[in-house]
Image 1 (cartoon, rainbow, N blue to C red):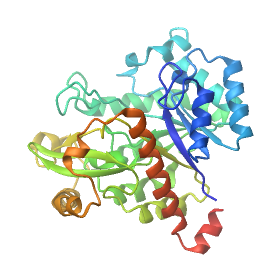
Image 2: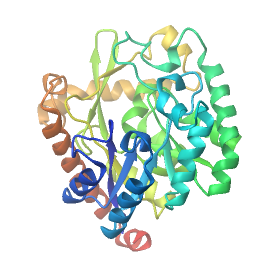
Image 3: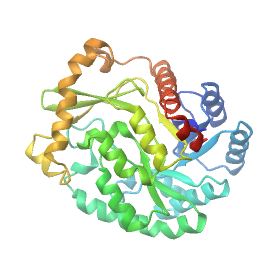
Image 4: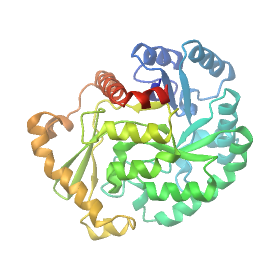
Length: 357
């Protein structure tokens, strides 16, 4: 049976669900999840205390839960934003990453999350995305990412660990697949976050089919597209509360990867509004793989939004832009997503369900 877990974001060892990693693990299990994606491990265990990590691993095993870890990011032009990784390597970011890879291998956690950038919420669009930096081009960043991943590859191969690049808001699936081809699919895969795909102008199912053969981790959540002044806004939503066809998405993933464990990435206190502008000449020039058919599909979803909102299948803009209490909102997001995802899995034909159980 396909297992469903929850991604959890830590900050200095705490989360919205608990004051320690063990408390968070218990809370995730109490919500009905069968696994946890710790993103990132150095934020859960800031000193990588071996005893604390062993205790966490033992309790997860006792509960029958799968564990996946997030490591540092792999864009050399933004690793200064992650000083703890460099500290773990005694001044070497590369050595810090290798240390985290070793920890994964020690506990048999062989699929690890990573990303190629970070969103800067306080900067004006589009400069909150590393893709639009003006001090270094995105193409040069991709070259540096590839070279850094190739330097990590020997440690990954030696430990039997694979890094999975998230379909993050700064990178396209075309670019991720090219990186996998350059570095090797034995050490590099995909963490699918379908909620981010439209931010880069990609119709969801086209992108999902492109990366499904390489997908070994997930950050599942839904999304809504709304027309706004200056372009289109993407809002996140619980699974089943947006525009994504979850029956088709789940089928595509589990057909390509029958043994895939699925993790939901919750959010609380906001719906992470991000802007895209595929009709803007500069924005369009930054997406060389984007086609007119892609743009037309996104605009179709924008045009359908008012009717969806009137029917109540998606939330209205005022609700999407609200700021509810973070913890309560986060738990509700996870619960709604869990129930909808489990229903999508159960809706698969019996023959396919038997194949994946």
